[in-house]
Amino acid sequence: MILKPDWLRVKAPQWERVGNVKEILRDLGLNTVCEEASCPNIGECFNVGTATFLIMGPACTRACPYCDIDFEKKPKPLDPAEPLNLAEAVRRMRLNHVVITSVNRDDLPDGGASQFGRCIEEIRKVSPQTTIEVLIPDLCGNWDALTKILEAQPEVLNHNTETISRLYRRVRPQGNYERSMELFKITRERAPWVYTKSGIMVGLGETDEEIRQAMRDLREVDCDILTIGQYLQPSQKHLKVDDFIHPDQFAVWKAYGEEIGFLQVVSSPLTRSSYHAEQVRELMKRYPRAKTIQNSK
Image (cartoon, rainbow, N blue to C red; front, side, top):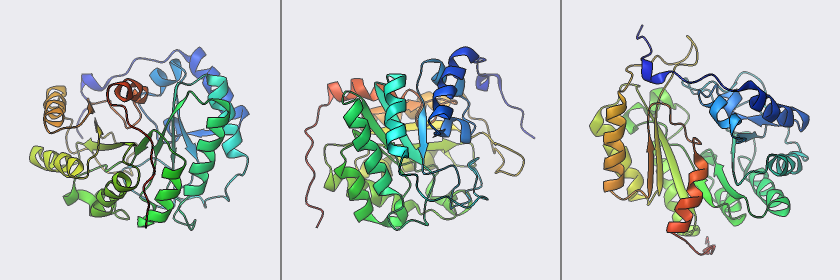
């Protein structure tokens, strides 16, 4: 067993603020990936009034061995009130930037793309100044479903690569590395204005060169933003940590990512895909883009 190093310690959250956010979420019947996936930054994010909303229920149709999301329960039918409730939560929390994600819903014909679209539309009605980031699954390669999401015009389209190509069979057995890269390629073709983003976790046995290759692969499909963080084992039944990577190495990857053209690289042991996601608003000021949906035919 590898002992967790000091640099992975997090400060205890101010539970008064955390409780206030949780109260809003429970009142509106909403879930957050912060809670469902046991994110180590939940205290910090809730303390400043931000959260990554998990739509379409907490039950996933896949069973990735690194993830703490529940896959044993049967997914429930979509809640038609969820987009309205999500928009109300954004209004109550006065969010400048909101992240919307979901479990894999391979049981749905469009993978849940329509629900993403409705959530974006309802948020626009009550909080038009809020920038919207969607963190989406691979939709089983249904690019028409992807276009549905893009047509709702989120500012950021995020899809996590999660790991290097060699480890996909073990880490994401129902995923496909090439399909994830294709998702970014199609996104750039159909919505050139959107800011694309991906995340990689480390500490599962990958090499430095394999991480660099994954970074180059993402730049090949014109991914704009990258997050790199340490994998932490949620429980004994999940994949074991192969190594705890020193913060200095994360700094090296950040520098390399900026060198090869990422607009932003957030790289540290406790970085998660939505950590400090609101910083994209500053990025958008520096690199403005006009919104135009391209013909998808």
